[in-house]
Image 1 (cartoon, rainbow, N blue to C red):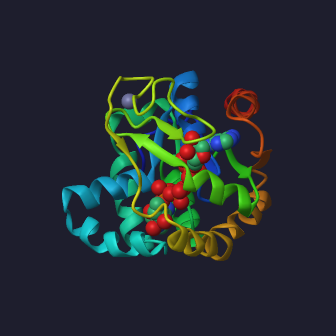
Image 2 (cartoon, rainbow, N blue to C red):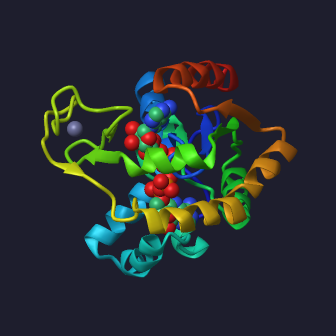
Length: 228
Ligand code: ADP
Ligand code: ADP
Ligand code: ZN
């Protein structure tokens, strides 16, 4: 595959940030507000693990350890997803790229179809906050809506506000030991992308220590500006 299915005019946005920064939470809001498509490589990899594909089998143990899955597997999964028709609306990349190799491959992929990155938005939070956010995280198994024990509890306990499902899921890798490795991977392999995108004039930094609604409105203003 040598291009993506996103037309020239449709926005390509990247949400950068450590695990637990709120990328998934904010990507879903942007999806609703701007009609964009959220592409989470974490979600795509978890689906591959659940489906038992060859890539999923290789990714499973790596994800459980908190390390990064190989660039080769992630790029193959991402390229396939980008080629699907709904991506023509524009995309929010959530959790991708996570290494310089992935960032360079994305540049090539977009160049091949005459596109550009509208913005790489870095959600800045400190390490202590990430640990608190990850420790309380759970997700609706019905629709994927994200929740938090303290910061975003459902109105009715254990019941999704959006779809009414009572199947709530906690991720196997959201445990204290794995979180330390994920933070390490973030600082060593992903944080350098902040400079990478700054060098291209695409970086926008957002203070992501505030509440979900305030950050969503900051992001909305940024996305309106860079997509114009
Ligand atoms: P990421 O996709 O960056 O790993 P998530 O969006 O899954 O992060 O958020 C991690 C956890 O923190 C979830 O439980 C979510 O409900 C909660 N959360 C997200 N943003 C905030 C925020 N601004 N303040 C408090 N909790 C938040
Ligand atoms: P979080 O934002 O909380 O770190 P994700 O769902 O984005 O969680 O990722 C979960 C795991 O999936 C990562 O710890 C890593 O093992 C793998 N993963 C997700 N995206 C990538 C990527 N772009 N490159 C390599 N590994 C990835
Ligand atoms: Zn739901």
